[in-house]
Amino acid sequence: MIKIGIDVLLKEQEHSFYWLAKETGISHTTLWRLKKDKALGINFETLEKLCLALGCQPGDFLRVGKSRTKKK
Image (tube, rainbow, N blue to C red):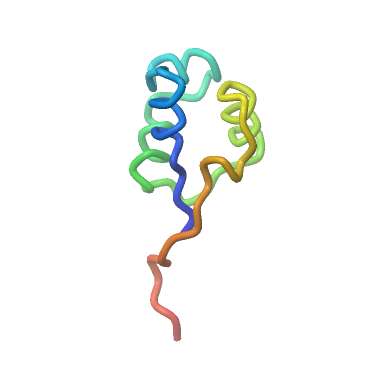
């Protein structure tokens, strides 16, 4: 599973999720799903908006964690 740690970057930069939603145009619901690892995926447009707003690269907040699905 890919984990999205945007909350860590927001804290480091002293920004809120409200600021990020306003800055990027990404809905609060989408940001909440990303934060809580409830999103099933992320499109490149959303990824780009996050990177531009936070001044970072995808690798700064994307992490590989344990998968939700069992291996066969």
